Image 1 (cartoon, helix red, strand yellow):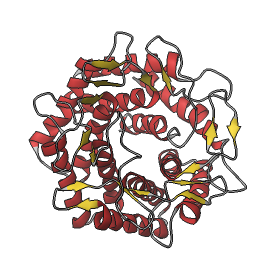
Image 2: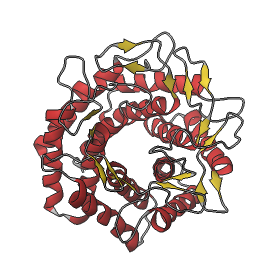
Image 3: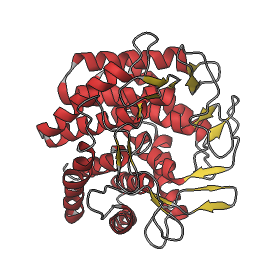
Image 4: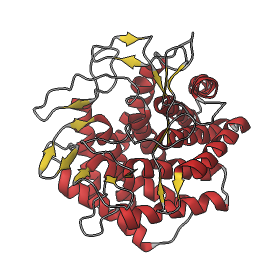
Length: 390
């Protein structure tokens, strides 16, 4: 596993982070909004609120872990763009999308976007002790709790207009349904609050984390099948028979991070973390070592998506650390070999491709855009480095 750690460190510092640093927009701020499949940089592409936050998280964490000031300078550049252009100082919250100059063009507010703001700003504070960043993270936390939390059904709302009037959840609904509650937003609010708690360990944040864990265990996790539900109506009824393998294994370690952060002793939650990992290992890992995407009813989507492989390696390492079952180490080894051979882009100036189709051909989708950045694969590398350095 020392070879694995060495290779992952090299991938982060010599490939992933240098690729994204080349996207730095020195004129208008942030990073350029799109790199297409042919590696053309579109300097006038739009810039997303989610991806800007994810970039800020990555470079803040990279500085914290490596102490390389280069990453700190990039993080500060991203921080300035986030607070000056992506944050709505009139109505609060982060915009969904701004243009390449930083002018708002899609002013809707999504709880998912705000959660990534908290995640990024908390990590930037961990790296820099910048009190302004922590204050903004606290403000976004209070905003989510005020506007985004529906106490009557114990769920987090999804989408709003600029003035915080609730609107249908277009941006985080997929597969032909319109979801009023999503597993995806729930796990990323949890992720954000966990990082916030590390820098602002108040009873208020702790109680919200405990409640999010309760929501996941009681309303989203299926104790019989060991899968997480994906999309729900206002009464917590699942509205589609969908299994998202990447989100499940990602959720397992994010749940465990929250448990550890607040030092919660609930054996059933610990068991949930382990059971999810075994379930995904047994159900969705393929003979070539990869993890496939999802299943709707009986239809398997065998696309191998970049972020699914990245999150799986962290999730299975977390499961190994919980169980000491060497099966998980073998799975990680096979996932890494698959990723090196098929997902990491071997082209000069490439990064990781979006996905590989079921037929083994690369998907010709963007290398960088409002949904694809440095967060999943960068975080995978940072998690491996930190977990294997203890």
